[in-house]
Length: 631
Image (cartoon, rainbow, N blue to C red; front, top):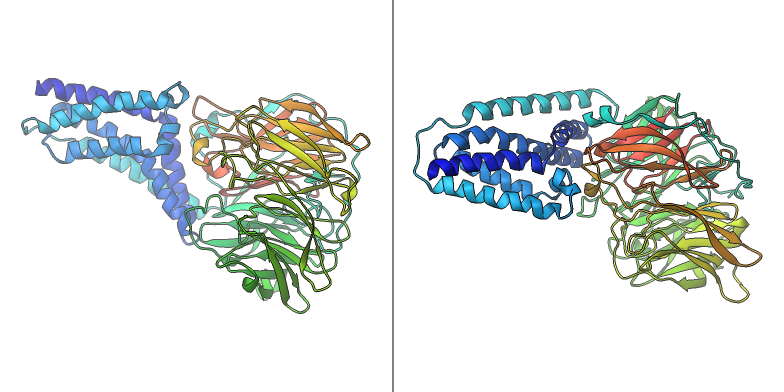
């Protein structure tokens, strides 16, 4: 009976492991885990910890397979069976491992996994309760597995620590590099440039959304040919959400890590680092994967200075220039506005108003104005709300802000305080949808048609709506012009700003995005759409919807010169490969024109960061591992 139990336990354990984790996942996890550990050494303790967790996730199934011979031979009770029980329990307990498993693609896959795990546990317990035997244990197999894992860990750590590139998953070698036809562009869009804000750096690279109106549209820039472009990367321990370009063509990346905010000046052609600086610290909280307050949004002002708010309630300015050691990022000014914020409230975003003052918003509903000439700050708090996104500047002064309750237009009054011009409530929904960082609109307001209109999305059920409002202080009739539902019932959400190209709005679906849910070849719900506004009739209509393309969560852009919507996609791949692609959609039809692989594995995931078109057409995207570019 005990002999049958030993054999049954060995068979069940041997079958359970490949059902729980694919060979590709084991290879990817062990290599990427070691690489993340190496990337974090001396730079960010968060990467070190995450790397160990990921590596252990790949090491557990290897150890389990090494235990099978010992279980079959009936080794002494103790180390062998205890290790097997711990490994099996850990495999079930660690959520991401299920997403890596073949069973995750089947209906009721988690139930199937448990159905195999339970008899395996029972059989192992039965062996443990049987009489002790003097059979040889699994020492040789475990030693071999341990040696192999140690070699992978040391190699991955050393290779990553010695280089500057983002380590990619080995399974990427099996993913297509380019997909598309001969037609790379659509018909050009007749879109006039957004009105420049004299307080921001000239051009279309002052902030994450290009300009003061937050249009996310490039005019006069054509993207590089993706077929001949070279794929490059720069490794940084943190999500590089803000990538900015100054008047000299220098590229500035601001990267948010678990414990610090870093800034880098990079060569836009090679992504070689030219200068770097630790801008600020941040506390490592449970929400560090979704909380980008305190440095996630950064801008360049008209003098080329880097401006950002911190988690400590300060507004800080840095200049980029030649120092004693060459090119440097140097501190310039620091303004403490913490007295205007709630207790421990971090600053979400800072933008210079046309008049020279600095608007800032706090994560807990504070809107403030700082006069940099005097250092005086004043604020208004919208109690019971949060502000997770940046905001837009109104032509001629003032700002549009989205809280978790309302869309606001504000101005600066004579006393230098933010004053409410108008407010509009929207449907914030019934839940925090997967893919969002808060139960609210996930969009930064987008100003359209020279300041006549402003657009956001809501969080309604069963479908999210694109909302367009009359922007001016006084509006005839109802301020809400239109609301257009987009994407599938029960599966619509966005955490990224709408794109405004003339009277057209482009929106992406981020429903179902979570960092750990994308592993194992999985992706988010599909969807991208275009909605057009008819100012004369004060109505809107949906022009197209692509219900196949999957955009986990990126600040997409429109190239008016190319007639394309540029984005960063991740197709579902039952093979378990996690491949991310620079992707172009025809702005007129929504058809996918081309896809070029940007990277594979978790460090190629942009995780809410934006896509950018450089002044010379090169493409870039921030990622959890740094910056990826087609140059």
